[in-house]
Amino acid sequence: MTSDESDTEPDNGSGDEEGLTYAETGVDIDASEDATAALLEAFGSGLKTEYAGLLDIGDRYLALATDGVGTKLLVAEAMDDYSTIGIDCIAMNVNDLVAAGVEPVAFVDYLAIDEPDDGLTAEIGEGLAVGLEEANLTLLGGETAVMPEVVTGFDLAGTCAGLALKDEILEGEAAVGDALVGFPSNGIHSNGLTLAREAVTRNHAYTDTFPLDPEVTIGEELLRPTRLYTHLLEPMRRHGVRAAAHVTGGGWTNLLRMGEHRYVIEDPLPSHPIFEFVAEEGNVSDEEMYRTFNMGTGLVVALESEAAEAMVAETDGQLVGHVEDGASVEIRGLSLS
Image 1 (cartoon, rainbow, N blue to C red):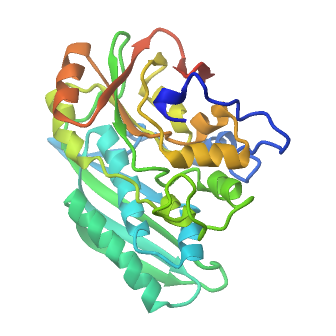
Image 2 (image 1 turned 135 degrees about the vertical axis):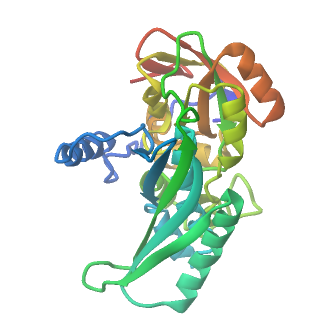
Image 3 (image 1 turned 90 degrees about the vertical axis):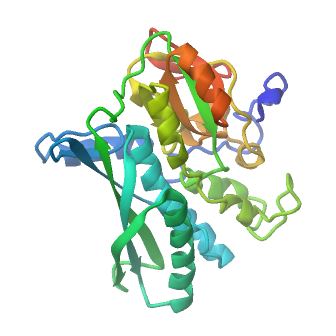
């Protein structure tokens, strides 16, 4: 599913074996969003962006984002390798703040575990330390809760605090005529793993060599840590980015969080081999892949065309499309809404 394969790409929605969907593997994104909306209705409406809650503290906002690593933890457990999931935990939170235009400054983690395990916690700590250093974050503390009757195995999550002057917060709304610049992901990142795990374990073990890259195993490929995008904050501000989409749960439909427009993707970044492998092994349709995974692009920003060219020139971003009137994401002949 790389960008130069669009004319020959097979229809992954057909075949003898039933095609997988995210909902059928246990994660229904629409149901999850409905449940979240129901939870939020119990509270008063506060100031928030699509990616972070904001608290007015005078001349700036204090922003908070919280997230976890999800079922990628099960791959780490199967591989007995917990050294990178701390990076995922940092990145999933930090990137949400970046998508709001907020500078991350501090982090706290929460580890729930069924029984103490010094080796596991030490490896998790290694990954957290790497993520903290890359994001220039301070770890203010955390909690390790031993809950054998509540948790089987463990779960890892965190909360990130950020600060931004009031004029630094992104508008959050793209404009018709804007250009779209995409930034590469590092692979599958930390969402969609429930579908990916089901697909790749139909005929393989995590310890099998990854057929599309014999230098790594399937498990190692799935564990590639989520990329951090904090380095893009300054270019985003300098070039007048209006809105950004962190491409996580919901895949490319995240672009609709930049406003009700038609996002036309004409030249997407190449997808990583892992996505081709998941699609083939799980007989997953193209539409389901783009609704679930980042497909090679971890962050998309909307800004004026002239500024987009300058931003691309100084970053690893690529012009991937533009914004029109409408309410959909158009990519590779698919229409997502």
